[in-house]
Amino acid sequence: MGHGSGFGKTILFNEHFVVYGIPGVVSAIELTASAEVRRTEKGINIKDERKGAIGYTQKKLTQQKDSISRILKALGLEPELASLEILLGGELPGFSGIGASAASSVAIVRAIVDEYNLGLSKERINGVAYEAEKAYAGNPSGIDNTAATYGGLIWFRKSVIGRSNTIEKLSLRKPVEIIIGNTGIVADTKAMVEGVAARKKRNPVKFDQLFRQAEDLAFKARINLIDFNLRKVGVLMNENHQLLQEINVSCEELDYLVNLAREKGAYGAKLTGGGGGGCMVALTPGKKLQEEIATTMKNEGFQVLKTRIGI
Ligand code: MEV
Image 1: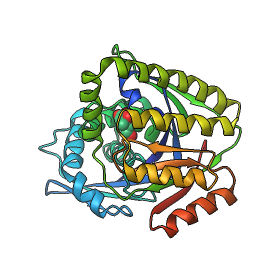
Image 2: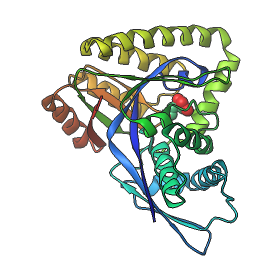
Image 3: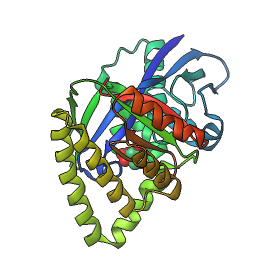
């Protein structure tokens, strides 16, 4: 039997913009997905025991099957010949926006590599997981699989000329508490990415301007994260949410949770991941503030994760 795991993540700056080579910042969170792979006689069988994954699993099943056959191909194994039982688990729930698909892909890649003794480097594992991500995101930037593979706080920039992506670890003075609030809406990242592409094509001037603002914001965020200027990081997260609203990837439920977190004292809040539902993230340094905001959201019936960035 082979085992593997992958980190969940939250994008702190510039989801969607990263698809076009604008830099972004992502942090792994403390929760991981795990996979066990066993060779069998009867095709590919997936058992998904991740928490909160019921609606999520149903909606993502076709994409998940596609992702596994892409993984096998990228590893040089014949998808038609492989007979595997794959058991997915771990603490990372199947919510949209926290890298559940990338974390599970990395976990599966690692488990298959373990089972077949393929001995791949992290870089290769990340490359194979990127192939798997195409099933979920169409034209992914690679930010999710990068966070799921390497962990930590990462400055990410996709190369748009076919070179290697920039993957730079940033260090935070100490881990910082955040909360992740789930709208409960299972979102389709691929459709969201395609929607941005279509709107960008229709409004090139507006989008160019927004993309320049997003780039400027990423550099400011980088400096303030390194300087541990959390108040300013929060303000920049708010500004980033506004840019994401302008490219139409937020929704009423996300805006509601973002505003609620800010009203209750979060340093900043924004949607995280593909948007259109899924999750938001709020910067809530200190256990007390984190607990207060988490409780408010839970009392309103939302699922909340309390975790940290920069671990
Ligand atoms: C999804 O977590 C992040 C997106 O930017 C897509 C991608 O970067 O591949 C929406």
